[in-house]
Image 1 (cartoon, rainbow, N blue to C red):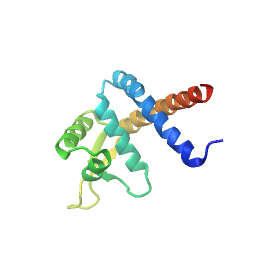
Image 2: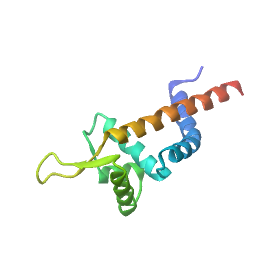
Image 3: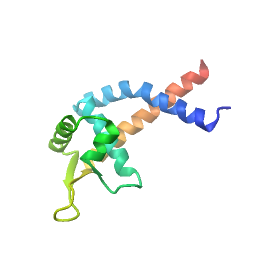
Length: 128
């Protein structure tokens, strides 16, 4: 029986192994580049965490470890695809990134596909 730390490490590695193929398939299905899907998934994860209501571009950049000009271009593309929108809570407050309904649907579809693929990787590892 695996310890919780070992199990979580195995699950994390299973996601890494499964991510490439899943994101390639989702990219073809949604006609959205893989890098933008990864940005969408990172933003969805940040927005779903209890720490922040919505994430800023800077916070997303720290999580993804990308240079801000590259990240901003991904965000602009996601905005044109209507997956993400900017919101402000105060007139001069920071612009935060909010997923639209289409963006949530795309991110949740990627997450479900990655969970299935990661489960297959873990099942294969147990059988081996």
